[in-house]
Length: 227
Ligand SMILES: [Zn+2]
Image (cartoon, rainbow, N blue to C red; front, side, top):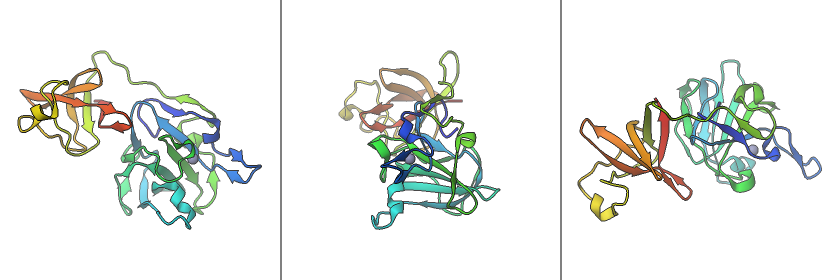
């Protein structure tokens, strides 16, 4: 599936083939939300043929916002749209499960909520087909996949933004953090020791570590993942 953990199609209008305006508007993909992770992963391997955003509104492609197109071995195209940011470039080879970017709502994302519009096209690059068999989500509103469970499992926390600073304790003010504790590296997985009230204690070395905020308001800073 596109997201680790649970993948949700919240609304019927986010299904493939949904029509609006008396058939004038036809939805060519599935609008999928990652409930447990915001990283968008390739459903199938192949070559990245497009990774871009079109800002010229006279070109309809602007509606996709940040998007990535992967051409698979069979020639089909997988399109992932409305990304907050992209993690691959055109020409790159990806495997199934590789991260393509971060879920977002760029372009003309229906409903305005963060999701990934996933569209599966035939080798002609134009004809969209039902993507359910590839996405792992039935073509109806619902939640698919299992939530990651706690217990004695091992987790890592990966910063999704640059410059995230560790604090000695969650309640510490920014002033208390200057200098002493580490600045985390974006994209690096740190061992996660515990979480508390939206904060995560990470290890940065054998005897060092600190607290970082997992998310607030609309921004997610850390992605928590089972090892
Ligand atoms: Zn859509």
